Length: 455
Ligand SMILES: [Zn+2]
Image (tube, rainbow, N blue to C red; front, side):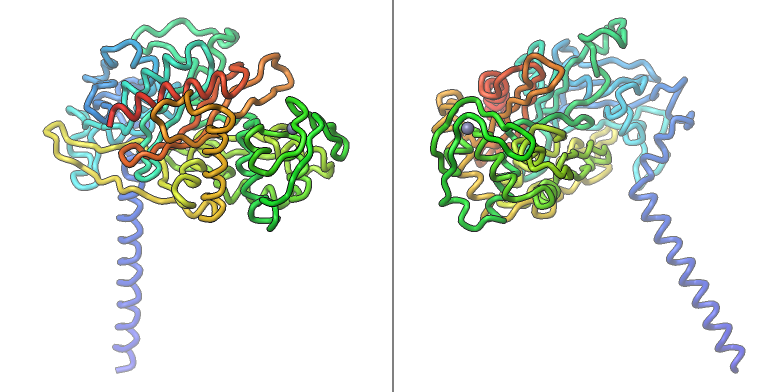
């Protein structure tokens, strides 16, 4: 009897291990099956390293790229081909974050239910969340600037616009020399895979830390004489701003006020809030990892901390993470995780998978989000001018980031709009664009007008 009991226990134990193993495998298959299929050694889906089948479309069904036995064709419109180069990618895989490379398994026909049954035949239709027309507008608005424009729906996570420049026409690829400054970083998606000096857009993080850490900060006043010595550094401003409230200090983007605030808060706590705001995270955009931001808050010199608090010094911010933080301010703390895949269908139109909308952890408290939103509106009303953004209920912050080696500053504009049908957060970055308000804000308005008009 004892023996039978022991054997029963062992049998149950083995069965439990088998069951757990099966669950683990099915779970991994569900999560990672598509990327296993995408391995470049899989000759079912690749021919000489080129994906054999699949069609990429924008959210409205406009074809962006399509493969017939490895012969790729791209969008009919040459502007769309350039605007979406980094989002779509190229069959050779040189743009590593492109959909052709990242979603190869899904494009080739893999899905969890039927597995690899359809591989190598007609492939699937993969609809991206982007709107080609809005991306065309963003590409044209960027003009000759290297940079990026990102717009997403902070309630659903859908990325409406994702453009990175410099770019080229994948249907007529030019001969690109790595030394040619016109093509510097041409294979890098500046929105997902880069980080840049944020300039004054970072004051929105310092402001968050100040609201949480200094209880009476809103009733304090600051004084600016055009420059102030903090630690070993002379913090300089664009002018002598005189006496300022916190709100006015943000309106005129006073470095002296924000340098002093950063010194009061201290490097450790500023680092904590940059992390809380999600900037040091790498987001997964349907499996495409974004670059994490990094900061210079570990210096012993309070002057370095002051510069870091105004968004200069060693601060480097990823544009996608900044856009998500804007979504969190708009949405009272939590926001949607950005997504680039809308749906995947079989050639007949049947959906093969479901993409659920996901929310981030709270990136900011509801109270601070509400105050920062109020101040960002006040920036527009009192400083930039609402007439720059006709018809838009817009909340924003400019940035003019200085890079030591460059003569002209880089231009930023970040923020969001309130609109029931178009709840969009955005980031615009133009290298060498000079002041944020004259270049990036203008680009943002052009793109947002197109984005709102599509709904
Ligand atoms: Zn000032």
